[in-house]
Image (cartoon, rainbow, N blue to C red):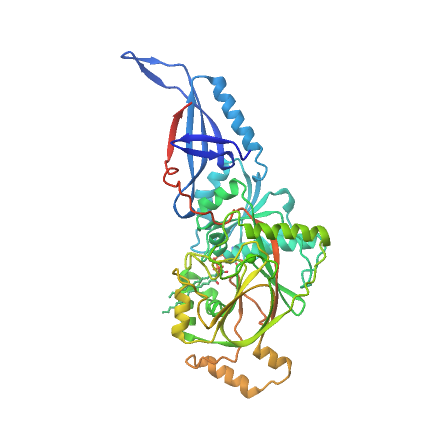
Length: 507
Ligand SMILES: CCCCCCCCCCCCC/C=C/[C@@H](O)[C@H](CO)NC(=O)CCCCCCCCCCCCCCC
Ligand SMILES: Nc1ncnc2c1ncn2[C@@H]1O[C@H](COP(=O)(O)OP(=O)(O)OP(=O)(O)O)[C@@H](O)[C@H]1O
Ligand SMILES: [Ca+2]
């Protein structure tokens, strides 16, 4: 159980929950005795493989071998440790793995085979592996297979691949429970089959924001020890039609335009294509007019301007978990319609970003909203109003340093539980004031980027994919799904003490 520890060496303790595997070993050693070589009695030994913390939230597999002459004692230890591992009920035994061979730098298959599969073997995890052959292969497959025989689903790829697996799993759960995803007010059924992310993509924002690093070995170890991190998921609808789910970024304007420019034709550029499109989009400096209506998240404890970030065991997310359990007990699956007021904001925006988590990634280690929570049932809505190119650059640069990116008069941030957006163009269309001259002017301005006025719509970037509609309705579903992760750990002070590689120790 969690309270058992083994002492490895020099003040380094390993909790049972962080042991990866225990293996028997045999030694036939010769020992020097009174000047002569003598054959010694057979030595018995066992090796404990365990999690060792390295720099920047990295985890590595380390090992320590214990040996002695007493076979019975050695067996007792091995048995006791194996029994303790068996008692770790949250550990997966059988996993379904999807590998996208074309994600990121096209290294998914190699990463899985060389870095992850050997660790899963060591931990006696059995796997069914599917190498995807086309987009949506994993998603469609999750509607066909017997998902209930697995303890988790692993995706090897980027945020796009994760999104596919998430849509497959959440969609399958709703289908099996008879819930209509097209109803924006439906209370969705939680998905208890955890997803593990082996990062091999371009941005890997979900992995980075939930583990603290994009590193395949670290993620594999979090899967092996059976970590569990609940995650908020937003549903996106248009006119009572389900469009998509989002866990990281829903972005209109800047991030939508980056994606629009970022066609499949540029995939050969790998992750660099985002920087190229980002630079071009920055120069085009388009702003968009529209109306946002949102309901503030009053039940969540915390604000987007907090100095503290969401970390392992976050008490704000724990409170939300309790509230959710109480709510489910009182109302069952029935959606409890809040009476809270709607706030309405009209304006001209360079970017509208709604994030369910910080969206930290290697490009921006603190993310788009550094104090956003993984599982508090709310999203941070960031509105960047029309401003000069220079001011927008200052805003972007603050994503990469310690300065507060919300401390600008043209940036507002709200913690919300739902919101709606309508662009000025669709408002005009709806009220039938279609002016052909205006439309032509829109086209004209797009062709002349120096005139930043943009009467055409932007598109929504939903976790890296474009949405077909600009008018959307978004609702956050508290802790709808779970990951094999534990949130970002506070930095371990004893990293140096724990950094010894392999230790041989006498019982
Ligand atoms: C001067 C440097 C400023 C750097 C500012 C960096 C801010 C980066 C913030 C990244 C936030 C990522 C949010 C994650 C979104 C994912 O769901 C999604 C799917 O993977 N990724 C993208 O849409 C991919 C989004 C990729 C975004 C790349 C943005 C690059 C911006 C470059 C601007 C250059 C201006 C230079 C002017 C001289
Ligand atoms: N075999 C395949 N062939 C082509 N596309 C695939 C295949 N398998 C998965 N995909 C699609 O590739 C997209 C991108 O995958 P992934 O997220 O792994 O990589 P990425 O480089 O991070 O991409 P992006 O930055 O575009 O999200 C996913 O949306 C997924 O649907
Ligand atoms: Ca959240």
